[in-house]
Amino acid sequence: MSRAAQVRIAIAASVLCTALMIAASLRSPVVRAAANTSAAPTGSVKDYASPLEILFSRDGRQIYVLCQQSDSIRVLDAHTFAAIKSIAVGHLPRGFSLSHTGNRLYVTNTWDDTLSVIDTRTLTVVATWPVGAEPSSVLEDNAGKRVFVANRISNDIAVLNAQTGAEESRLLAGRGSSYMTPSPDGSRIYATHIYPNLQARRTGVESRIPPESEITVIDAVRGVVEQRMPLHRAAGVFHVAFSSDGRLGVAAQLHPKNLVPLAHVEHGWAFEDTLTLFGADIGASVEVPLDELERYAARPFGVAISPDKSRIYVSCGGSQIVTVVDVVKLLHFIHSHAGPYVQDLSASANYVVARIAVGRNPYGIALTHDGSRLFVANRLDDTVSVIDTRTNHVVSTIKLDGPAKVSPLRHGEQTFYNASYAFQGQFGCANCHLDSTFDGIEWDLEPDGFGRDIVDNRLLEDIRDTEPYKWNGGNPDIPTECGPRTEKYFWRSQNYDSLTLADLTLYIRSIPQRPNQWRLAHKQFTPAQERGRTIFNRVADKFGAPIPEQNRCSYCHIGAKGTNQKSFDVGTRKATDNGALLDTPQLVNIALTAPYLHDGSAGTLEEIWTVFNAKDKHGRTNDLSKDELNDLIEYLRTR
Image: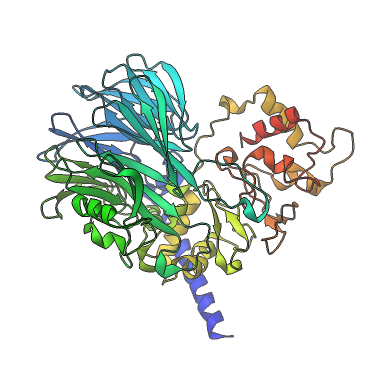
């Protein structure tokens, strides 16, 4: 036996033994509860706080911390950091904000589709309002008349009556509408989104198009969309911040390099981490990098600008740092150098003045009113870092209540969101699988050849026991998918030890399915969904001709997850593909994951059969009318 074969066997044995030990450890009550708690948003122990966002009360005396996995808002004394109260809210809160007067705290509960209204004087929930699909952030207008709620799944912003919670209108936003920020005077609201907007697609090689995003600008007084600011080649846009004079706006975002093979590792081969600047100080909006060779700022998320407009602070979740930008130097660089800047990894040395190490997976940030302290919510170690902005040093670390021991699931989650394993710390699993899901982007992974086998990024929810993995079915299990393959083709550096790989595998296998927005209660179906289910399960076409077993929808997409775990040629091979056989994808929450097919060439579910199934190899569908096809799609959305 060769030495290489011996090493591979040893690694496999080590991973298997570790996994068996972890399985044995699940006999303990705490860890067993973690593995079986379906309510936990990402498979971790629900008692972990997981602080996601942070803000100060209007008088600066209290700190509100949104703790996602414990479904709570923690209230702390802003001076002593002592815990005042923990307020239970709905499931998987993601965003919150104060009313204009500060008497109310609004909290979006993503997996409940509700908005909790907290009285900040009594620190109690006084109302719970139903809202849209996966509400992710919320803002009240200055007049206290309207509440705006960004809904991630319905891709819109709901406008509510601030007194009753009744919905008045819906505004079309970007795909995955998630984060909103008011202008300093409150007249406008700036909304971002985490998935690229769907665009008209073309067949063949030319189907690959750069991602396009936007900042949706809303007139807060009239409650209408005023402008859509284009963000070219951006996919994954998070928080926006403004200077106090309103002349400078900053958005944190990801700039994927998905139109070229992932080969140029020394030049930021998969992502660049950038800011888009706009406003009177800038003129036309510009995009600038935060990255530098060997010093990357993976996954920028939270943004804040100091009251005197001297500094921009950016939390970078994958790199576990806060990046500090000198505004004067930045503006001088922009006005004295010709763009574009985003591909220049020497640019940030002109304006990035500090990179401050904080806790694991920093997300939301907030400055004190005088700008002397910056508070950072570290999601994956249940802490808040307090930074002295004069010295750029962490001066305090606030530990939130929660389990002292890091469980295997928690360790796996920490690994998933950590960018340090990749070459030069450039990106991590969560770059492509945002919030442990997907990114809506197609990639050229060069092991198959440059420009060959373009692949659409698949959803990670509930993928346990759906092996093999990859579109070509080339990886038999998750340890292979996330171990040797990732080390060789993605990280380009030494990969996880066997224990870390086992914990990461455990975490990925635990990622639950989010609530399906198209299902009725008690597993009932609408008439259209019922008709679609009949079509899905049929064994003969409309003319009575039998449909061969392997050409029936229910043969390939069988069971609760909608896959028989086999590979087929469904007639969608392109000139860029090396083979025709494709792994049968699961159907879990398929309505969310456009574009479709292995290379993302189908922009909608309908196009799978109207554009790419001329020979009926991908199920017998050419006998269906448009209404019947619509019924089939309505049923598929319930999977």
